[in-house]
Image (cartoon, rainbow, N blue to C red; front, side, top):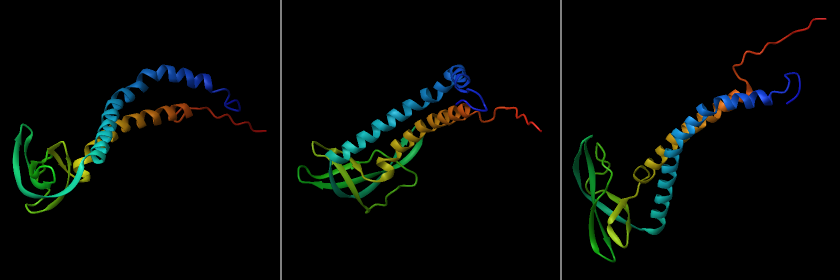
Length: 165
């Protein structure tokens, strides 16, 4: 970029070399979240492709106590051709309960292990991967924007010289 401002490339490269350890921090912080989130997306997509879809009925909401507190997890009955009537407790608990007793829900289940079933909803399948990807992208984007701003010289104190004739 030769011109009125001179050749800025060496200054930018020198600045980048000086800041490179700091610019790696967002990548190191964000990359694990991003990778885990993407692997969870892959897992959910594989689950939706290979598991069987059916409908079930919520028959109970069981209180599950954990160290972080208690939550309600739905108990669902559904019927399969392979195993007949199956009852499972979903792995996601909420306060208040997401489903009332008697609510019909869409269920995905593994035909080889019918008890490893999941209730199909965006929150139950996609919320976790979405949060992980966002948590990973945020530091990476911040680092990229900072690098871009530094490269453009935003915030630098440039002297402007005026010549009056």
